[in-house]
Length: 192
Length: 137
Image (cartoon, rainbow over all chains, first blue to last red; front, side):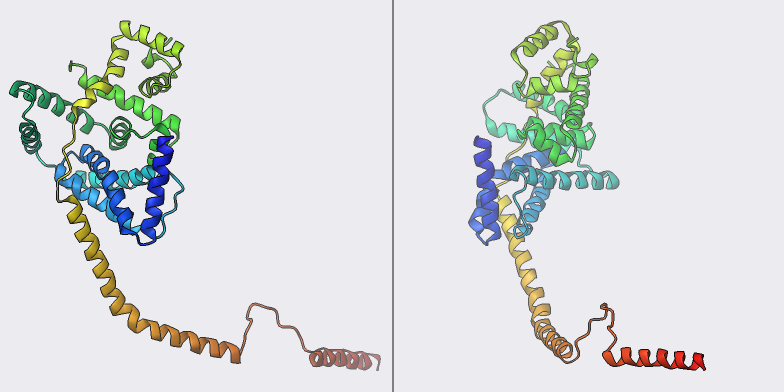
């Protein structure tokens, strides 16, 4: 029920954006900025690139304001744009072989945790090692499987929504997820 | 057979388990199986392991950068509008008026078959009568 209410609110906000109400766009941005950036971060595994891609997503949302029709849940539409942008970026990055080094990402993670100042240094290092292993396991998945797992695990989209985003049937999506989790199980089997 | 890897319904069972939509009987059966099957235990616990992959907070300047780009796009659009649409609008309007005037003066329906006039029909009938007279002679 909450999801339906949220859908209606988001769709209504987007329709208002089309009528020229920029406050509604600010509300949509406030509500979805985090999930979109986090999804893209886990897809491309680079903070600067993920924020750049998220900017592109919200620019496309704004450009579509006049022709937007609430035929699907707003989040489904939004993540369809985000997935499209991410898959294009991954494809282009593969061509250019321009991945950022893992060392920089590792440093990035450690800096964030130092800022937390709660866990001990040892706990931080254990967490960082686990984080890197999970990150690498997810990175090793084919892009479509990766997108499906990320929307399923971290963004809370239901199977129907993810299937719609990836343009496949629900049963095909479940098979895709099964293969992805099976692959992750193999890669993370040693992790306690 | 409830083993996820040896079951045609493995994907349904796993996704049902993760979404907490399995019925009580199916859930109990899978939980019993997981105790003895390391692979299936690994499949359902990998979900928990993914919690380790945290994402950083969005940087504070994100919205400002986005609004700057939106404003730049808007300004670019206005610039093109000034450059293109303003001189083109009167031209387009003048063209439309000329077209309308031509149409009113000389309306054409090129696709419709042309109907013969009454005079043309009479002419053809007369010609046929003349031919008949000639053939009798």
